[in-house]
Length: 131
Image (cartoon, rainbow, N blue to C red; front, top):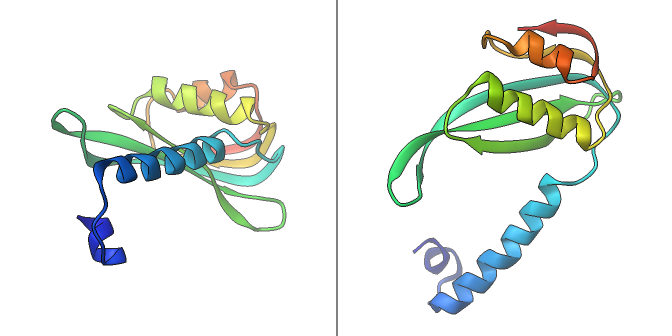
């Protein structure tokens, strides 16, 4: 087990469960935190990872990387969906907007079909998009 290797000790299932609960609370709080209103640029993309639930399946890890007005990089969020689709990106764009993003100077995405329409429906002020 990874924790045994890192911390050189054995941990009970209940201890591991408690640690997992604390970490999950922290991740949930980070994932729902308010965001800045303006970003110079936001890059969005997805990569596929093998994730284990009941079985091991490839799922899309969607990532947004923002660059604020001062040039500081941050990850506004990440989301896991079964596939990369225009519907999943629509949910993500809506989440960014609901958490406070109002204006993006440049929005960068790969050539996913429908992304331009999603950006225009997302009610964000986007001065330029490269898709």
